[in-house]
Length: 314
Image (cartoon, rainbow, N blue to C red; front, side):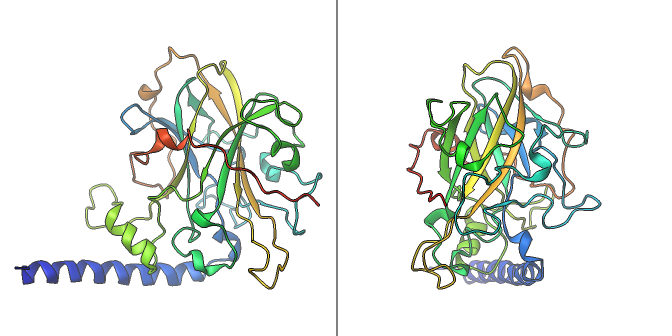
């Protein structure tokens, strides 16, 4: 027999979650449209037991939401910005990320060893939990491609990078495809009143430290493995999120539309004898994600077969 007190407790919990979500959704609706998309907030090494270890790293030219001068376009970078199709002239990186821009000591490069795993963390901003908000979008909120190179260009073009392949023989041969995986990592969720968010708040609760009744947004992650043969030095990474609109789905774009968002960063690949887990976690954000472990499937996610890209060049 069901315990009435237990039923009341579950009902109260669901009511609290729904009320919190309604407030959060209303607040999100008031934000500028530019904040509705995603970029990498931070990078962190994943240890053998699945826990995040070592200090955090950041993208080139990173600005936090709490930094003076921050606005919705400080990190958000859409390609193409105007046209419906990417072309051979579209630059890959945000203007502040076209060079190795690490002038702010608060946001250093990530340090990682050859063979190490990296969690590239970002907010889903409703793309996962409110997928019905925009027509014609792909399942799992699209695909994230991560490319690596030791020969970056200040004028990197997205059309060039999208030709790189796993073997490093595609396109101009300067880089390689490191991984391709769903934008939705299966765990992340914005706090809103949608059924996906509510289910994930219960299945994957995220609490502020020492506040077990708090409800925090669960960040997404793209999981990356650094090649065991990667030499020490700088490895430039390009996080490329493909989120196109399909043809005949939205009357605004009857032939469909390309839509990419990117984040460009440099990693400091250090000698394998270095001890990443002993690095102090000193470079944190004011609006930090309290989650301390990667998604359980982080190792298998990086081994997923690369999907065929469906780019249409103008």
